[in-house]
Image 1 (cartoon, helix red, strand yellow):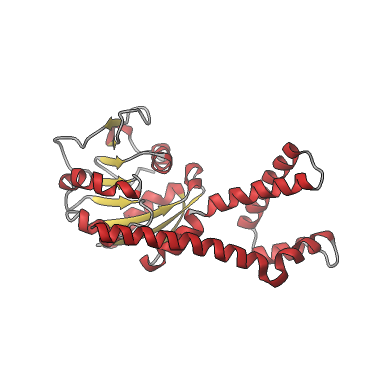
Image 2: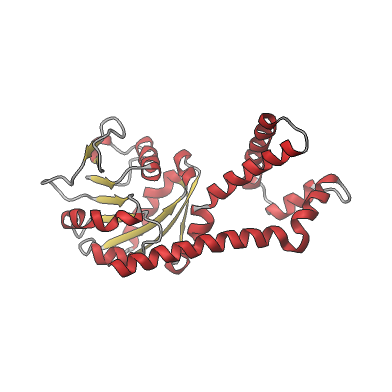
Length: 272
């Protein structure tokens, strides 16, 4: 299948997330000759990809431009990039907490603005990409979906819910990595060698996630099927379930993350 974007593709920034997305797109058929990465250093990012420290001084406007810098750097790069964008440019932003209205204030030329929130498993095509936007006709929406499809699950989300989806899916991998680490540490606390406990914890989470993803039953039902009445698994679940302890802990975790996303959005609005 041909890559959905024809013409120049610019990435402003290519750090962990932007770089991972670019590598997946290249694997999916994006021609490196189409790609220009604009970053502070001219360090190469992939064979055949042009890397510049400033926007190209001449030539066509990009068909698609993705903003992949830190949100705090937006006002440093916007004045350099905005004049080069055309009405037809699809502007994609993965800047956490920066709303489409804040993007529109800085980039008035493009008709279509897509706000995307990917998470780190996009690097292996198993991520989540939440999409929202402004000025998107059906063609632009289909283009955005096709662009993100090689990265994993694609979901359109109302912008009012972006702080929540960022907390759940965007930050979620970090929370799960912490859980895997804690599960291994807990295994070591009951006598297993630490390195063995870490391997068992990782493999257990990997296999369980794959089973949950392919099962017809909900994760709650899968948990109950593992836990025999009066058995050892049930005793462990009782600790998590008592007083809704696990749900309360995770709700507080996501609420803290969502509040920070809202603070970032407010800062971007005030700076516009």
